[in-house]
Amino acid sequence: MELIRLIPEMDIKPFDCGDADLNGFLFDDAKNYGSSLLAVTYLIQDDENTIAYFAYQNDKISHTDIGGGNLKKFIKRVGSLLPKEKGEFKSYPAVKIGRLGVNNDFKGKGIGKQIIQFTIQYFTENNKTGCKFITVDAYKASLKFYEKMGFKYLSSADEKSDTRLMYFNLVSV
Image (cartoon, rainbow, N blue to C red; front, side):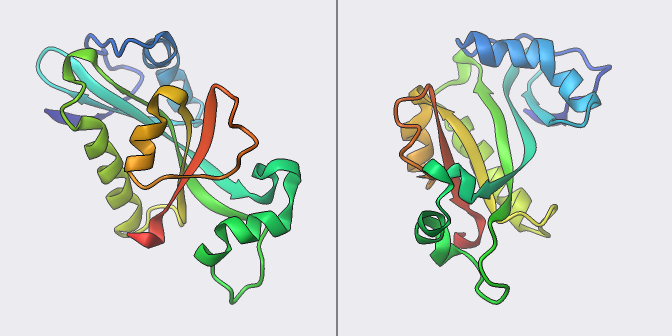
C-alpha cells in the first residue's frame, strides 16, 4: 500500500465505497478541489485499486456552530479545551476531514482507524497549520466510528440532519 497526494495529472485506480456521494467526489471533484485550493486529497493505493481516500480542508470551530450562536454555550461545551491567556475567542482553527471513503473490498480492516490516527499524528507532530481541532461532518452511518475514535458532537441542533458536526481535540492526544 502507498499513500499518495492526488494531483490533477494522476489516474485514479478503481474505487467503490458503496456511497455515490463519496465515489462522486473522488472521481468528479477531488482534482478540481485541489487545483482550486479548496481541499487536498490523499489516496491509499495498491497495484490495482484505490483502497481508501481522504480529503483535508481548513476549518474552524466557532460559537456560531452551536445552535443560535450562543457564545456562553460554546465556552461551556469546549471551554475546558481552550487556552485562557488570550481571553475567550469566538472561533478556533481546525482541519476538516472533508471526505473519507474506504473501498468496499477493504472495509472492516482498520483502514479508517489508521487514517484518523495518521491525521492526528500529521497535525500534532510539528503542527503543520496551527490547528487545535479536527472536524468532520459525519454521515449518520459513520457516527459510531467517529465516536469510537474520540470525536464529540459540537451541537445537538443537527441531530435530525443527514450529517453531524463532530470535533476532536488535538491537544488531548
